[in-house]
Image 1 (cartoon, rainbow, N blue to C red):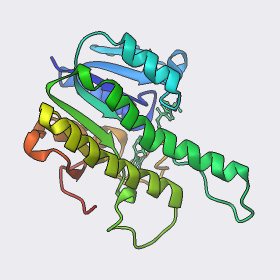
Image 2 (cartoon, protein in one colour):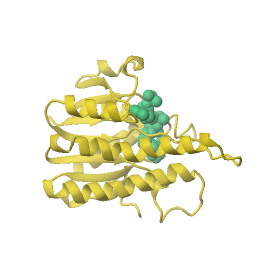
Image 3 (tube, rainbow, N blue to C red):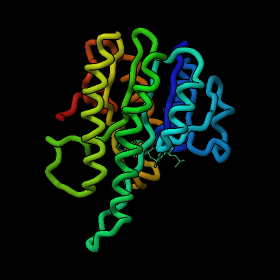
Image 4 (cartoon, rainbow, N blue to C red):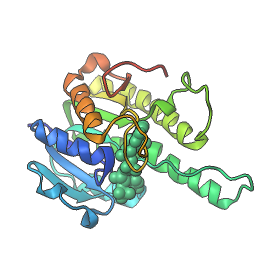
Length: 224
Ligand SMILES: NC(=O)c1ccc[n+]([C@@H]2O[C@H](COP(=O)([O-])OP(=O)(O)OC[C@H]3O[C@@H](n4cnc5c(N)ncnc54)[C@H](OP(=O)(O)O)[C@@H]3O)[C@@H](O)[C@H]2O)c1
């Protein structure tokens, strides 16, 4: 049974993906920033809940050093939208931007590198990105910092694909769709279960020939 680690699994897409992959027979480690506040997930068969705040370098380090065994699939899902930059720019705007880049881009890079020697031969790393990270697709503007953080995550996906590909690891950037979550809002087009089912199939279909690609939740390629 594949051993799968998912960040940001307390709610939204990460939680639905933990349940979807457990249903597909994965042994899932669902990492949550505040595990004590998460209800119901630890009761799901084949799901174990553990704490990890991906914004904390100390927490990332201690998680990686205490992790026992190998990982077949690592899903870097935790993400934040941040807020809008205000016109009277203040320190708070810089802090928000730092936090968005830290959680959305830097943490997936550091966590993947810290766990690199635990990745089993043939392992898969899925970076949950966004269509908003597509430079080619950016014709409307808006959400500048979030977009840039996901474009950075796309770049990091290519870096990790080049670095880990020779070890037989496949690294993908996957857009989950526009999903009804706290981040996606109530007008989004799909629910978390539909997104998770699609990503579950993308994971099942992944192989080294797809290393370093940018796909949506249906497995269709996206323009960088
Ligand atoms: N929803 C969409 O339409 C959409 C579209 C494109 C891409 N995405 C991407 O999909 C991923 C999941 O988004 P979502 O819609 O499910 O968002 P969400 O409902 O807001 O959930 C975000 C998840 O990330 C976790 N998280 C945030 N900061 C964290 C940290 N420092 N450490 C650990 N976990 C942290 C949250 O944990 P807490 O409960 O502790 O806050 C929560 O579990 C994100 O990367 C997002 O950018 C979403």
